[in-house]
Image (cartoon, rainbow, N blue to C red):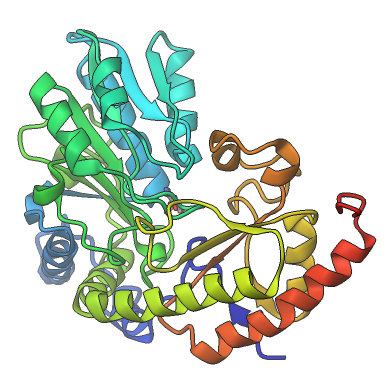
Length: 387
Ligand SMILES: *Cc1c(COP(=O)(O)O)cnc(C)c1O
């Protein structure tokens, strides 16, 4: 059975070019970039080149890139680093209720250590109101962290507006751009952020490598204590192969960005329209327009997302309900609850996230199979409205 992968928000396959570029750095060019002999120089030069490419993707300069082990570490580094690096100024952080757990759990951890955190609500489309951010700022606020786009419902947040408010108040602004870098224009200058997180495996690079953009002049505490790597911000021998792979993935993503956006937008809209047309009682979650080009999140009433997922899997179709980290539990996702949908409806959501290999045939196949599955489930469901 040919599998149809529609869970690109969870992870993406590394490109062939990425894997090929990485391979020599496991064997022939295995040097430690801190060494002064030729092996070290080779590794160092490869790292310099990759750092340029990653910086270029987000329009930063190379010395503003700190490589991390992924998006989670970048978020932890940004939030803990600013919180502890600016204790002399205050102990208040502003975030939203729809952030990824890498942000939410870090904030909750800090709350137990004496920090105060404000969790801002979102509107029915998942948008954070910049006025709410403005009102939440106190003279103790040191950081605002709001994601660029949400991984579950695809809503794109007004980051430039929020950054301006942060800048005017003298507060650092971080954004989790793991779902956006390499997918929609993500330019640190235009967005006006001080810190931004990205992850390679969400843009067809390898797992286990990411980056934190740290604008020049930002006061941030060191994250891993040990060596003086990454401008003395993260001690540990660099993951050279991962960094090289990340560089290639970033360069190719940038090159293909506009074309991919157009292609995926069209397929996304085809899938949304098809589901709405062929299945009764469905609702698009997230913002109808300000959404990621690859995200389709539908509430399909009177069935559990989990049951749809299992039935799609039997047919070789991979999708998601809630986020990958929480899909093992039956609790509705915190993101759906933040939209104020009741518990049972929050459990009736299913997410398809398209990718660069997704074809019209695949979308049409889903549109053929999904209505059959939903009809069958509804016929057995205790949740069904009986008219
Ligand atoms: C995937 C994801 C992360 C975590 O990135 P990892 O590289 O897997 O640690 C963080 N934030 C968002 C929005 C994500 O989608």
